[in-house]
Length: 253
Image 1 (cartoon, rainbow, N blue to C red):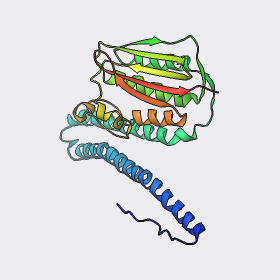
Image 2 (image 1 turned 135 degrees about the horizontal axis):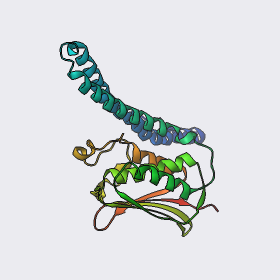
Image 3 (image 1 turned 90 degrees about the vertical axis):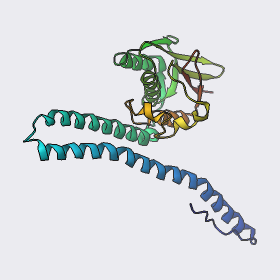
Image 4 (image 1 turned 120 degrees about the vertical axis):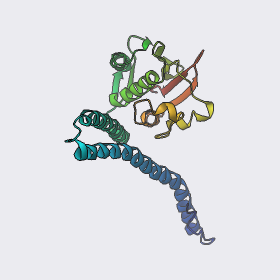
């Protein structure tokens, strides 16, 4: 990587100060640009795999479909599966791009959104989802932004938890902040990876993650949404096993 920077002259003071400011700005922007370049590279790689699989099965049908029609249903199922993976990935990429453009911020009932998401996920996943919330808790936030946080954390817990386990979802307002918590009984997250899991496409356990549906962007979306509202995310161990995600937002002054 280039380490070029603007030469900072000694006199006059005004030019030196300006050159130093540009150098500091470049130093600040460089890691951000490197992250964006890595993101584009990772996204291209993630899309390349299903594209290649789909093209491979299309060519298989073209070459052997007439002579061996029995291969067609299996290939179509594979194409359908891979195209769904691409759809999820593209939708999550679009979500990341739209976060800063979701500017409508009004006071909404967070409890209502959590109940909607829990009901949706409970209809798809076998785990029991238990909630501990007040009847109403209003907060100024874009409703889609909060929906994204809740959906990604609760669905992530369901994906990585035993089927007969319980996921506990809590919402509370105390000590000058609003806290949303999701606790699961999954495999847990190693302490050294608790910052990395919010990086785009990071996989802690590749062998297991490859079996789990998703784009690898869910927690990155949660982090971006929380940052937008100056929120904090804490990852701790659950007992006897599992992980607790806590997203805390400052209350209005």
